[in-house]
Length: 370
Image (cartoon, rainbow, N blue to C red; front, side):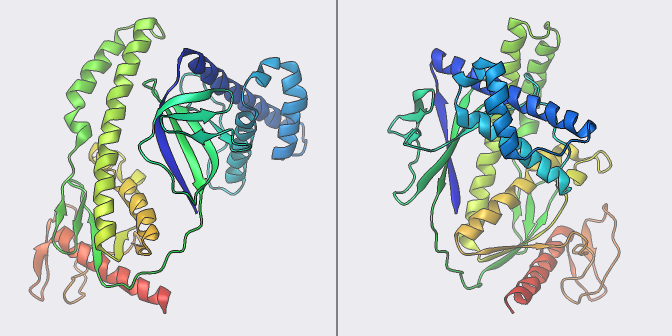
């Protein structure tokens, strides 16, 4: 199995310049190879494999542009491999066609591989190729059985730098007997309603910071684009966005860890959160601010690490229309917040849905293990 540890790093001025060169070279090679592939396609030339693309970079591009030799060779190679991954996803209809990277809008990052101890996590530093020892906050250390594989260095829009170190390890995960089961139903004005009648409210971090963010964006609007003051103000706006994102992630990590420690089987609905956040529903901001999809991704790997399971019920399962007591189906609109059945069942609509999701998820689980 693989696990990554992400550290905040503080490069000096010389190291920052080297990082900027590496980001630029990776972006340059990516765009050059992408343009070559498009030209070959127009001329009915066969698609180049990642090895052919790498040979073209080493023998043609590096000879024509000597500055490509000044940066980490693994970073450039991985940029080519990422392009090939994008092509393969496009061919398999798993994603869109690869796009050219832009200096101002594209994410600044590169990945380098571990070889001959060129990467090392020290007490207060991280050793990286072409950079040497970079000051870092080492808040956790990988266990002794973990083998270092690669490191990804990135720069956020607010100017901060991070290094994500990837490890490989052998894990023996013993399945846990299913005793404690819970069903979670998505709640628009919160986060979820559980089958045991608990409602998880969402702190709405984006809404709380809306006035502060709007004020910073108004100042940015009246500045000349790409001027010194514009770039400084843009970093202030980016810091507000990053703070909101970190608050949301912290909250979701705590909630997902709490659920993963308490329950052996977690049943959820397999919702399309991107579709739910569109203008048609009228609650796009609230949906995006909740981060429910992120919560499900966290639950997935945290439960797997503990030998427990996450069951996703199909999105077309009518969880809110089926009576959790007798199974009768009653048509409801989005404005109906109370569920009422002829059998006498009266309860909150979301609670009824959570109980149905729990029952359906447990049924699917028994089919899997049978």
